[in-house]
Amino acid sequence: ERIMKAQAMGDNRAQDYMKGKKTMEINPSSPVIAQLRKQKDADEALAKDNCQLLFDTALLTSGFTVDSPAEFAARVFKLMTAQAITEGEAPPGGAIDPEIV
Image (cartoon, rainbow, N blue to C red; front, side, top):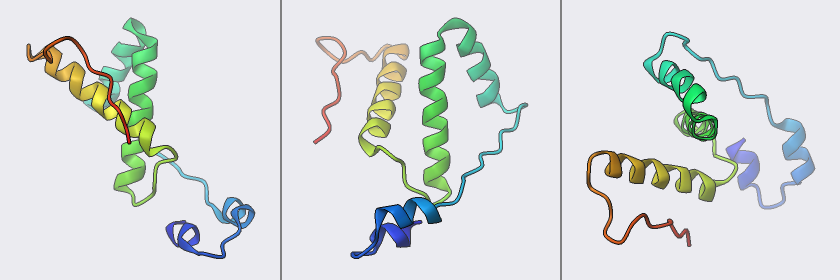
């Protein structure tokens, strides 16, 4: 998939045709999955965002690329900000929206 994207004369239609389906195996007894189940009941939007983050990180660790690197980075920054606030290290002046250049 990476090689097809790197081809200068590559045809996007051929890339879509040649792209294989990705399969993500989930261990239901994983602590991450257990936490996602709890989040789904408490805050479905947060759980959905974290599921997408889990999928994107699985893509990256498997050697694939994420569809939208800017959205992936925004989710990572949001998670880091939430972690900092949880630990009592809120940024001065409130939360700052990440700017991706």
